[in-house]
Length: 300
Image (cartoon, rainbow, N blue to C red; front, top):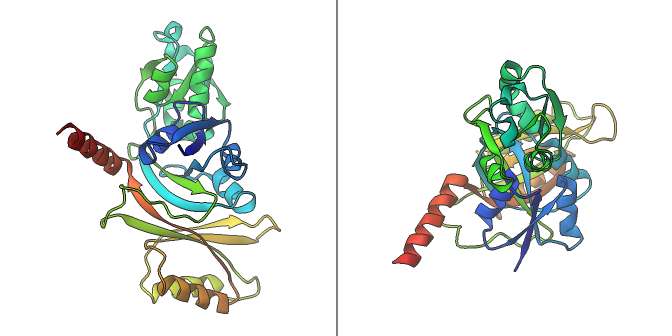
């Protein structure tokens, strides 16, 4: 059985994404996102499931930066999942949840619930931990502390906590992109893929520092080929102030014509070009529907 690493402990959104995308894989929790990615190169797991981007807070920079600068792997598949944050407490604090002195959670979750915290818990101290599940686990282990965790309902069940307030994230359309990373370039292939499955190709492009209008030229290379870009983001190269590279997602599968030709044009301009992965994209709802159909088929 193959193993997939995820940001733990159990009950995290990342574990839920891994379960939905590769349900037959053994799931192994790790303390941090870098640890999860390192585990693939160290042979502890076959894949790593990591959060890459949130609809409210943008890119998960620690994932992207560690991927680019330290642990380059293949982007094998994507799942976009809805994120609902809840305020979790021990039974002792259920009736006095609005008086807790401390709130534990991952920095992204805290940021997603900023308005709720300002309105209902303005005096509470914020304590950051490695994951929402880690926050829930801490509350379980310290039930007498006047504290709460921001996490999901899976974590509430896993650690025997009470949901004091539901859906406390500031925006309803809160979704996160998770990527399945693999060490080799073997494509993701299973029964989930159909003719309707959409694909993305992710590329990293560095610009020549002395080329005037280079970014415009880069975008033009995609534009005249009518290649749809779903994302373009700059990240520092960490080689000096003002030095950046660009991560570009193209809404298409890597082919033998358009992707190679755009790479050749960009390289002719003096740009550095790397294809990070070409992968199928799924939504949480799509995978749930597939799962339901499989169950129906087995029962008939």
